[in-house]
Length: 150
Image 1 (cartoon, rainbow, N blue to C red):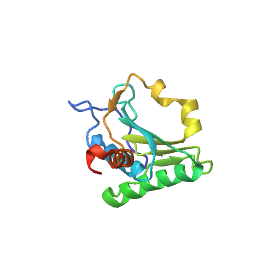
Image 2 (cartoon, rainbow, N blue to C red):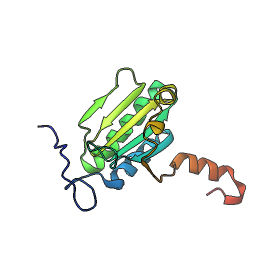
Image 3 (cartoon, one colour):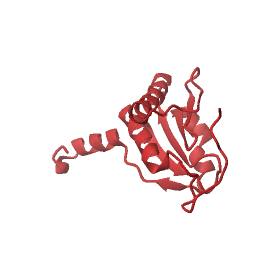
Image 4 (cartoon, rainbow, N blue to C red):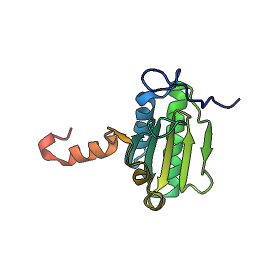
């Protein structure tokens, strides 16, 4: 049975019974960050699209890292919430791996492909959900003597 992608929205503009919300997509972003994904961006596309609410876009520098990031997102959401993506695309080439969780879609790009497709430009009218990359923040604060290594 395929997931119901109909668009009966509640008062908040969300599909009733939606699992995602910002919480799960933020958790997916944290999982990507734990594997050193770069330029993590979360876009709220619920105003522009009726088939999903969020895009999580991130990138890796190698095909191996792209696979590792996608695997970690899937592992973390599976263990914590028993969620599996409805569909996983791009695994073989590992240039653009897509994890479709219905309410949000994770796009893990190889750096070169991310520049070429430029989803952030295509969806520039979407609201950006604030997210601070964990590993970037910890590296920056550790190198800033004024932060005391925290």
